[in-house]
Length: 556
Image 1: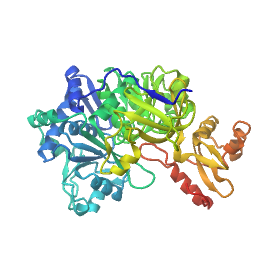
Image 2: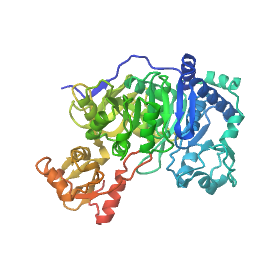
Image 3: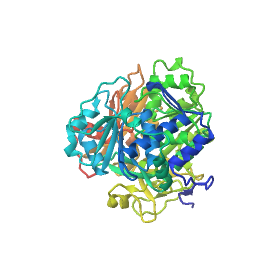
Image 4: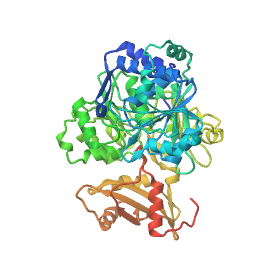
C-alpha cells in the first residue's frame, strides 16, 4: 500500500534573491503599473512610486541608527505604512516584527522585549484600542531596548503626548530619508536570501506566544508559488481584507502580488464586509482573500445583491477549516470560479498545500489541494512517527524551503517542532488520497474521545453546515463523567432564522451515528476569535464548561 507522502514539483526554480532585489527587478520591468490602492487612505501608488517611498523609509531607518539584524515592530492594521515597512525593512536588512493589533499592555511588553525590538511603528489608536496610551502606561523602564516609537499620523493630526517614551511622527521619519541613498544600496548588496527578515508570533492557546523567525527565502518563495497557483499576473488586482500582521495578508496577499506585478487593494484598515464588496466593484478586483467567516459576512450582507462582482476570478479561502457549503456559495454567487484553498501555518511561511485554479471543484471544496513546489509532506502516526498508508489519519508534517529559521531565542521549542530530519510537525490531523490531495480533519488536540470513540469535530461541522437554517457552526468536546467527553455545538443561525435544538437533532437522526449527535446545542451570534479570524475553540470549551458546571475526569 502506498504511503501518505508527496513531493512537490521542482519547476520553476526557487528564488535565491532577497525581497528587496526581487522587488527592484519587478519595478524595472513595469515601473508605471499600479502597485497599491489603499481606499480608506485615498492612496494610489505605481510600482515606481512604491519603490521610491520604500527606499526613502529604508534610508530614514538607517539614518535613525538602526543596523542590519536589528528588530523593528509594526503594530498596525492595513495601510500604506505597513507595506512600506515590509519592503523598506527587507532592503535595510532589519527584521520586521509583526505585533498583533489585538494585543494589550502585557502582551505587547512581552513581544517587544522577547525579541529585543529597538524601534516600533504603531497606530495611535483604532476603535477602542489606544496603542500610544498602552505604551505610555508601560513607560520606558519596562521597554528598555526600545529607542524609537513612530506613530502613523495623518495630515492635520494633533500632536500626541509622549510621556517618557521616545515618540515621533512617522511622517517626520519619512522626511529624513532619501529615495536614492547610497547607504541603502550598499546594505542591500550585503544581504543574503537566508537572512532572517520577519518574526511572527504564533498565537498559542497555552503559554506565551513563540516568535516564528522567517527568512527572505522562506516568504518570498512562498508568496511567489501562492501567486502561481492563482495564476496571478500584471492585469490582476487582489482585494486584501485580511490583516497584514498575519501571514495571510503579508505573504498570501502582498508578496503574492509583488512577485507577479499585480496590484494590492486594501478595502479598509480593519475588516468590513460592505467596504470589501464596494472595493471589489469599484476597483474591478479579480481576486479576493478571506477566512470563511469573512466570506459568510459578505454573502449574507443585506446589500450583497447590489454589487457587481463579475470581475472576480480567483482568491484564497484559508485561515481555518473551509466549510464545503460556503465554498460552493462563493463559487456560484461571487463569480470566484478559480478560488483556491490554501493550508499552512506561520512556521512554514505559511503555505505547504494549495489547490490550483483548475483543480476540479469537488476536490477544491473538499481538500486543501496538493503539496506546493519544492516541498515535501507526509502523514505520520502521532505515537510511532511511522508514515501511515494513504487514506489513513495521522499528523501532517512538512519539509523544505518554507520551514522557519526557528523560534526566536527558544532552541528547545524549535527542536520540539522541527525534528532532526528537518520535518515540521504541524499538530494537524490529515489524510492523503491516492492522487496526493490532502484533507485536514482536525487538530490532534481538538479530537474528542467519547466512550472510547474517536470523533473529529470537523466532520460534524461539515454535516451541520447543510442545515438550511445554519450559517456557521463550531463543535467542541466537553467533559463528561460517564463518557469522558460529550459533543457541544455552537450554532450561528442564518439571518431571520430561529432553529430549535429539536430541529438540529432531528436533522442528525439517521444521518450520522448517534454518538456524533451533539448533546449540547447553543445558538449564538458570534464565536470567540483571533484578529485573523481563527476560532478559539478553547474559549468555547471554557465558557460552556463553566456555564454547565462541568468538571473533567480525565486530563486533556
